[in-house]
Length: 177
Image (cartoon, rainbow, N blue to C red; front, side):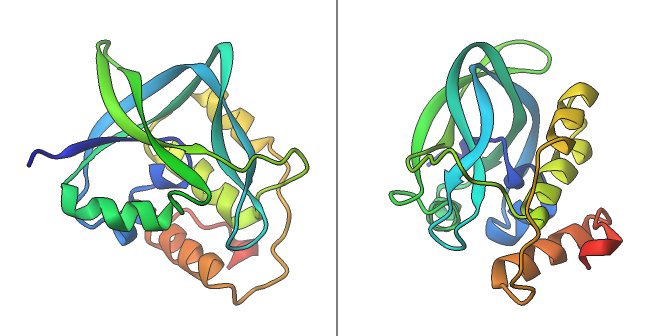
């Protein structure tokens, strides 16, 4: 079976985050999903916060990262993305940074709620991934402007795993450590 192409637009843009979930991924480069925008109102069934999601939005675009992964890593990625509960795996057509359309899988939100904010550590993963992958500066700036909430549960396993990924990427903000 051939490797799958995966378009990441949220926390999985950060290599260290995705490596912890799918150790056999390979970076293909940056891409853009046209006709969508990024929101942070996907309800997390794990911690109640807002997670990144893509929603149709004519004239807008979502920059992200293309990865390849072997089919054997797909169950781990589905589990990490709460496929079937929080997100649904879907096919999309994205445009590579140098041009050319690519068919990829991604995860679309299925439980959008308008009153959510991401935890600070989750937003830090998204920003660090966007910076690490060299996404456009204006896009990174917009990500930095997203209002996040401070996670009151300092020992939350998801928070600890996120901080570990950020440390390994040398991108952790000292105030979160």
